[in-house]
View 1: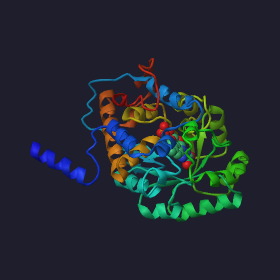
View 2: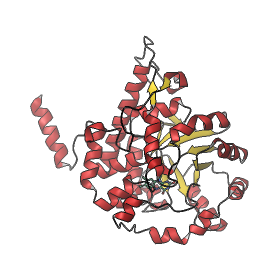
View 3: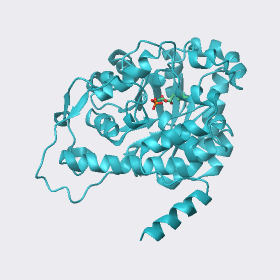
View 4: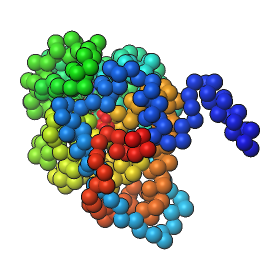
Length: 369
Ligand SMILES: Cc1cc2nc3c(=O)[nH]c(=O)nc-3n(C[C@H](O)[C@H](O)[C@H](O)COP(=O)(O)O)c2cc1C
């Protein structure tokens, strides 16, 4: 038995990746593998990183109220993504510059998404680009655009997304100004794509609901608005016929001193009242985090840094392993809460409790400290 285990470990080592048993080990491996510049780019947030920590604080302050004796011998942890079955209610959030984190960039993420069975939202600022990423793997996919050009430029992206099998289109709207990420500035990490971003800045700051209306009047691909952080804007998005309200503060990388995503989620879910889907991201690092978000009314949960960490730890295999562990954690959590599917989860399974430590990106991984 031991001998078999030993040889399996040796085989894993020969293949260049370890047998990770915990997400903590994946984060530790990512830290070892990444040079200081890409590490701070992946992990960092804006200015004081208060929003980054509030994302974790909001999650860490939610406790569970488990129900028992409910026959949880069969648990269904699959979900649906805009009507299509997926293995978990989890999506790879758009990450620009993934090519600086892992060889193959977005194509590696697409392969991991396909291998495990979750959707990928591709960022418009990630290499190898829209067509190449779509060709890399047959996975459920959505396309995310930073509006850095005029209407014709946007329409061209919509056409290319449609032609390449992207089932929905996302506009990220929390980038009216480009934030100051101080880890990158202090480390003098110059991102190779920074010049391109600067060129389109005036289009990003000029964006208004008029462009949302224009999109809805012209295009049929379902529209996701990413970066909604208030019930007021969620209401406006619904009035404009947007299919998905994506609650996000960009992982605390844009406006500093915002509220945690999970803290604003309940108000937005109440305001939307079933008229659109509500998705969320921000600080999701554990299966319990996914369950909390779903219990609060999110339909899909995005992972940003966690996906990047999985890729940095061991490429495609590292992200697939991170998703496997996440799934195991979700299933354990559902079972211990006394539910067999997400439909049975309600806010009654949750309570608010003081956090037990200082929330930050890594408070989900206490053994790393
Ligand atoms: C390295 C990095 C790059 C990102 N690039 C993009 C992007 O190109 N487009 C976008 O809409 N959001 C981008 N985001 C934000 C993510 O899509 C997501 O909202 C955020 O990472 C969620 O928080 P989390 O990292 O704590 O999971 C990026 C996030 C990170 C960490």
